Each structure stands twice: as C-alpha cells, then as structure tokens.
Length: 336
Length: 290
Image 1 (tube, rainbow over the protein chains, first blue to last red):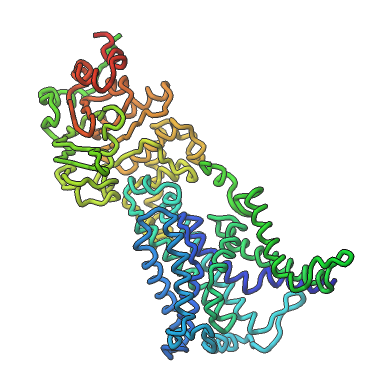
Image 2: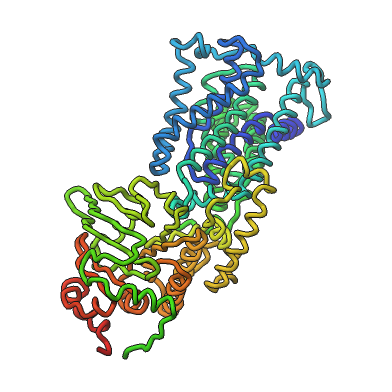
C-alpha cells in the first residue's frame, strides 16, 4: 500500500481543478437553491453554455477566444430567461422539472449530428484554448515546467488554470457573500421562506426569482468555462444530469445558504472522492478474496466508490442535515 | 356587563362620520378609501364572491364578518390582487386597482396580513421588519454590492423597525429567529412588519386566530392604535367579542354576498344576522348587557 501516493492524490483532489469548478458551480447553485429556494436541477446546462460559448468561438464563429466569455454569459442569460419565464410564476417543483429537462435538451442538441457544424457533435470541440494558455506563459508560468513541492506538484498548465480558477472562486465568493448580506439578498431569503408574504410587502417576487436564477446561472457558466479550459476541450456528455447532482451533493455536504459551504463542500467532495478512489485502488491491486470467493476486483473500484459516496450523503443527511457549515438553528425550524 | 368605553378624538370622529350612513348592504360612505363594484369570483360552478357594491370609510375600523365559507378571505385576496375576479372593478383612493399587480399594492399604501401567519421563520425578527420597508435602494441587485449606497437608508429603516418593535413589545426578541416566536408573537410581528410599508389601509385577515386571551387585549389596542394614527383598518374576524370591541363599522358576508352593514350594536341587534349566520349562542354574548 503506497500511502504517499494516496496522500498526494487526495490533497491534490482537495485543491485541484475539479474542486475549483465544482466550487464555482456550487456557488451559483447556492444563490438559486440555498438562498432563493429555486430548485435548479439544470446547472449542467448553464455550465454547457459557458463551455460552448468558448468552444464555438473557434469552431463556428472563428473569432477571438476572448469573445467566448461574453458569448457564454449571453447564452446562459437567454437560457435563464427561457427557463424562468414560463415556470417562475408556478410552484417550485415545476422549475425543477423544466431545468432538468432543459439541461438534457441542451446536451442532446449539442451532441446531435444535425448541428455538428455549430457544436461539433459528440466529438465536442477542441483547440480553442491556446490564447488562454499563451496568457499563462506570458505571466511566466511555463506550461511545460513543473512547479511546487511534494505533495503539491503541478505542471505549469495545471497551475495556471488553478490560479485563475481560485481567483474566480474568491471573487464570486466575495460577490455572493456581499449580495446576500445586502437588502437584495434579504428579499431572496424571504422568498425562500414565503413568497406570498414578500409579495404582500410590495416586492416583485417574479423579478427577484428571475434575477437569482440568472445570477446563479451566470456563475455556473463561468464554472463551465474553467472546466473547458482545464480539459482544453468541450465534450457534450460531460454536461449530463449526474454533474448537476454531484454539484448539489457537494453543496449539501458543505451546507446550503453559506458561501463557505459551497467552497469547502466542493473541496471535501473531491478530497474524499479522490482518497476513496486511490485507497480502494491500492486495496484491490490484487483481487480481494476470502478463500476462493473474489470480493472485489480493481475494475469494481469505481462503482464501490460511488456507493460509498451515496452512503456518506445519506449518513450526513441523517446526522447533520445542515451540512458542515450550515447553521443548525436555521435548519431546526423546517416546519416538518 | 357593558364595558364603559371612552373613545379618543379620532375614534369619535370615525364613529360620527358613520352615524348617518344607511344601514343596508352596499351602503355609501361619506369618504370611502376603498370601493368595489360587481366583484364576482367563481370556482368551477361555485360562486365564492358576488359583491354588488362595497365601501370602506376612511379612517375607520371596519370588520368583515360572516360564517365559514362566506367568501371573506377570497374577497380579501381579490382586493389585494392575490386572486383575479371573473368580473368587477375596485378602486383604492380613487385609483383603479383591477390592473395593478399584487406587489404594487403595498407601494400604494395598501398592505395585508394572512390568516395563517407568514413570518419568515429563518430570518431574524429585525430582518423580517426591515424587509417590510418599501423603496429600498439596496434591493436592486446592482446596488447590493455597494453598501455605501444603501447603508444610510438601512439605518433609518432599522431605527423605524426598532420603534415599531418597541411599540409592539417585541424588542427583546429583536435578534431571535422568527421561527422561535409563539403563534401570538408571530401575529404581532406580521402586523408590525406590515406597518413598515407605511400603509394608509391595513387589511388584517383574522388577526385573532390562535392568539391567547391576554394577547388579544393588547392586539385590540394595537388595532385601535392604527386608526388613531390615521390609518384605515379592514379586518376579517370570527371573534365576535373582538369585533364588537374594536370596530366602528361591521359588514356581514354570507354565501359570497354582503347581507348586512351597520355599527357593531346594529349588527348585534340584527336578528337575521344572528340567527342565520352566527347562531343564537354567539348572539347572546353580543347582546350581553342589553
């Protein structure tokens, strides 16, 4: 058993790029779900908006990569409006149905053969991120070099995405924190508690819900951009339902309606996930067996890992429903 | 046992202004703040509300009573824009309200509370109060990040909120979560929060439901206090003692229609109202001391 390797990979998972884009997406989801009570099950769709905004600059529009940022944001605003206009006047569960369906529609459209000229079909899009990496080189982080010390060793390419990513996490974390401390955030939290009461006090609930959906969506879009930049490619099947639900898991793990919850929850999710994966892989190097019965082969590690993640989440919900950073007092009055 | 009540200047004025009003359904008032005409609301085949004419005298406390299912709350919802009538029109301070969205009524000075209290349980009491203030600069998302823009206004709002909390004897609960309050305290909070909008017309949907007798007295005082400060109060209530005690004018609804109007004493004597809609036992308590 190579404990050094397990430790190194787990720590890297803890602060790595997966945790970064999860943290950004979870922040966006927190605005919608944690603070406003909007059940957005389509965060992957918003992330796809960002990724395809970047990708399409090279693949279809043939314009500078940097136009991809406003383009992706435009996509997600349009998506937010499309989702929100018909559903935000209805009860929360309808939004859940519409968002999960919209995200799937986006995935199926961008991977379809019919629209291959625009979105690259199931192959996705590659080769759009060179200007981003060139910028990293300009800042003196050579993408081919190795940086850091054990256990935090990264290539320049990874490091550059990490630096940009964590900066974005910090900026959005600050923005969300400040907004939720403001009267604007107070209206959102009040909407989460009771829409009619807020309406009777003269607030345009519909408009606030739309603002929340779009703000959360735009943050999710940026997360999708970081994801795409790290991979250097956009793959439609990366933006499927399970992505949304893993992000939701990370959010609940950290604690909803808390900025720190979204960030640390994502770090813990990936730290734990990587640790379990590496640990189980070491255990199953040789098939584990009792007598003649094989209990686990190395090919079964992935499945078992997801089972354990599921069990962890169930235990968390039973014994610590407010997550790691959630406010126990806030959770205690749930009207159940 | 007739409680000798002395009425303040405002209350006397309100009662005098209503003295010559006809005691009949849909009676015209000298100075109506809220009027409604031909309001009709149907749920499937059931006609929930069918009101020909309805007026509320400015500066008075008007009670809307009637048996369960009389359409009182539905009528309330229609007037505040929480529900749309099949037909009819209504005005507030002379302004046609048929096309006004429910969230705009508060800015115009018309605020309501709910039968089932809607305190925002995971917000603190003071945050509940602050939410009530209208026209907050910080409630625009582009201002949210820049606390300098809204800090001053927020301080004024907080001051106003503290005043109201003191008046409603809730100041000691200021920083508690609203979810930690008792049912009666939630009623008080909801009323105080409604006052944060600086309303001219306060509409209370069953303010006494689920409130213990001791608190009822102070709630009564608060409602009278609203009128004495120049606000108009319209409330729905089942508690006949409270209606008799507080209101200047009573409007009786049954089966979606207004069937009687008058001062509390008139209504108490109206045998048709008592027999048909309130039952004889409740009538006795109203007629006590006659």
